[in-house]
Image (cartoon, rainbow, N blue to C red; front, side, top):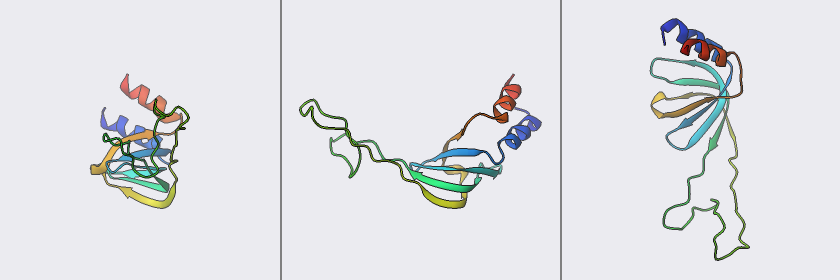
Length: 118
C-alpha cells in the first residue's frame, strides 16, 4: 500500500470504534484517535474486557470458567462467565502487545480499503 493510500485509510478510521486484542488476553474497545510508526494506538472513551482463559488440559477449571456438559452427567448445564467491561477512558495500547485489530461496523473505511487493494 502506498503512503497516500495508507494515510487516507487511517483518516477514514479516525473516531471509529476499534476492538484491539492484546497479548495478555484483554480486549479494548474505544474510539481510534491516532497511531505512530511503532503501532502504538491511542483510544478514547475506552472499555477494557478480560477474555477468560480456556479450560486447562488437566480437566480442572479456573474459578468461574465455563465447562461443556460431560457425557456422564447429562443434567449438567453450561456455565458461561460474561466479560464485564471496565471503563478506562483515554489510553495508549503499546504496539508490541497488539495481537489483532478489528473495526466495528461498516463505513467509509471499507470502501477505502477496497479501493487501495485493487
